[in-house]
Amino acid sequence: MNELAHMRRAYDAIEGPNEESFAAAREVLLGVIGSSESRSSSRRRRRSVVVAIAVAILVGVLLVTPALGLGGRLLDLIRPGAPAPPPAVHALAWSPNARKIAFVSRGEGNRDVYVVKIDGSGLRNLTRNPAADFAPLWSPDGRKIAFESDRERDAEIYVMNADGSAQTNLSQNPDWDATPAWSPDGKKIAFESGRDDPQHVTDIWVMNADGSNPVRLAPDPAFDHDPTWSPDGKKIAFDSFRQPCGDTNGCYQHIWSMNADGTGLTQLTPMPRFEYGPDW
Image 1: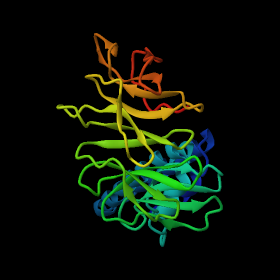
Image 2: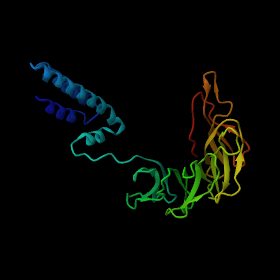
Image 3: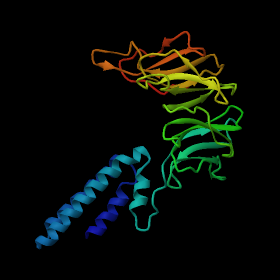
């Protein structure tokens, strides 16, 4: 059996992540190695060994990736004529009526905010800006989308209408402003910012939905990140390196909560490792 036949058998062998497929793959590898040893020509032997190593790597990867849902995708990519993989998408955010999803993608070569209907139709690039845009989040009434952008050469909080129009810089500060979070009533936006700190350490801030009246909540020498509102709007959870943050092995990020005015600070996860990204 030639090398191409062995590779075809390898493709067939890795269709399922079970012991039978592993045994079949092992048989394929032994067949390749056996056939390579039977060659009298040293040139063919070297070529067979190279093929055996390539098939071993391929089968090893594909035996692991089915558990992650990637095996079939990898096979599609290595077959002749397979299309290039699509750009990665991330930061998915459901609209309040669950009819659309906002997300970030480099689908047109740059990191922009897109929106698509849940049936896959109506895909649109909303921001289409040379700068990078991140972290879209719908307002509670679904009429606006807040997001981060570095179009001012630093991270800023922007807001736009749900159709991408009227993109407006709300934070307008030369320091780091990021991770916007709408209050449940849509009247305020919480965010993290390094403004007003000589070391640019980020604290949690709250401003009106039009960007006015930014207020710093519970300032601390440690970094605070990722604010999120409770459903009733009375509390804000976030992650922080503030004390107590660890043990003799180091300082770790933990989940904290506070009242919406910055009072009532409470550490929620006094665990010995990192915790971050809270969501009510």
